Length: 585
Image (cartoon, rainbow, N blue to C red):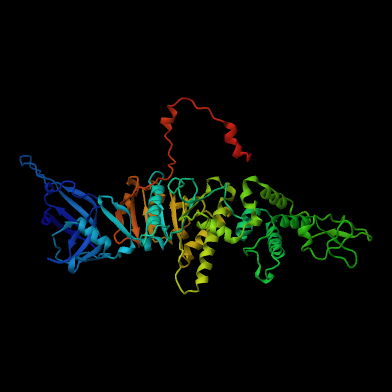
């Protein structure tokens, strides 16, 4: 390819127009999205790097019909994205950002060679930092390394429409991460990855993972914080909800003190991770709802039907179902309603329904036998069979508690990171960093202000803003990025943007991308499955890449409808289908 076949015909601050004098020299050498280098000065080792954003045809045919037809010439528009300097011994430097080229413009323009790409991608990477999970889309012979530290120690997002290859990309990246080793030891490496799998896709991709689903999950209700307990038990739109919250908080706090007598009561508060007995709390609320106050001289305290005065509600309201005396205005038996008498009828009904809901059995069964340490080991894969990857299969978790379940797990892992770092006392860095992958994140951290999403949004947004300093980072995966909390997305430093067909999602991603990529983002609706725009702090040159296929693929949600429909009619055992549905075991 002759460099002099290019002729610069126009220059702006970030766009260079180049005429190709003889198009016969080219045969599929480049297309839109290809990279070129332009000499900064004549015979210089400094170059400006640009990406071809479009081209147009310059027709040289004469208007004179007797003139022989001429060859078409092409004009390409190149967006400048960085500067490239060749140093001694073949080393190179690359810096993002370019501000035009000096006068007079130099020809000698060339397409970036494979060697150029390899040098640019690696020029700021130590060998120990290189992490490869993709190849250049235009040339699959060129591996695209990223800085693995900057990919995983900063939040990242993988976005793309259904069928674009998000799940395969997640599986490929995580499989490569858990295979990375510094040395030749036989044991697992020290990676710790938690996947929130809302569709049950990842079991097949990680057969050795720590699988947690509705059948074995251990989440004791007493670990819930105020927002989570409120979402679970309080009907926030009731007129009386402020009284419900007040009495419920008081009952839970006092029951924690009652249940944990060995702990200094000054260190116990509503959000403390100490056990409490939900049945005793419900009993307290029922007693308060039925309470009658004796009004005779010297009484003015709750009074039972036997005439017993109850000056202290705690712990009697926890342990006894009290029959209160009748209300009366007579001088001999004067008694009046307590301050909340009859106010909590609907609240008690909700408490009883939630407590006895068989679909929420996993919150209440064996809760008294679990410790905080048991829960942490389960969440991070420190069980009898250690695992790098923990998969929370949320497909069987009731939708009404999906948000609070995700909230609790996320919050517990954040607080684990916080207290682990505190234990180290600043003497060393976190030595068990966690990566949390939120698959279909728009379903539990949406931009919606609805109360039912409050707990999960609060927990995950806190990780997005503060998690990195405690060794907790996020991988946000979604097919609808426009529906995800801006607070979470704005904290992502790396993006793997796959095919997006929805204009709102395309515009939202363009707005959030940390680089000015111009028309590169216009590729988003036309990318093939597995292709992505890779951009962020972990990669030196924003690139269109092809993600490697995972060794073991996640379960595809696609069903071959036509192939199945062609088969003979299949009978369905409806009794088996409805067994779990009706919670019949």
